[in-house]
Length: 113
Length: 112
Image (tube, rainbow over all chains, first blue to last red; front, top):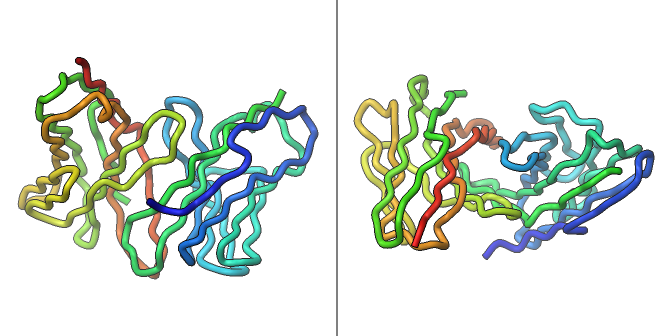
């Protein structure tokens, strides 16, 4: 089993609050990703990273930001949460020499009231 | 990136073999075909990957015809725990970065 963790698993927060979703992996993977998924819908890539100090925006425009200061850690931050940010956020990692096998965390289900 | 088309949903019964077909007419020469499985409230999990002909692992088989414009994921003797969403993805490994485009997937429901 892959060792990739996300905290919190569930978060209910009020509009305007700043939040950080944590993602950590212990596999030493260089590549990490954040996806957003609404219930019953497709996953959309919102951020990715090739390694330390490397971050890029994904296909879906997102008001969130990410950082990659350590290989194992890839947090996602929302400066001011809004109800439109309500969704599930999934973090994934991938070995550099793997073509398509990404390991996903359990996800954080965010509800902004 | 090649677009994929798969059935929205399928129903099966325990013990049956399930075949989910994915269409990818615009697949490029360097593209691989990958399948993921997602249970409710969990992240997707890699099942199998192939380029051509047939690939088999302990979980599933993947059949890819010579023209590679479609592929079929085969799940032998499904159980209730195989109820999940199955995603077919096509992409190219280039420059170390792999873009996975997840479509709507196929919702498989396995009944007793």
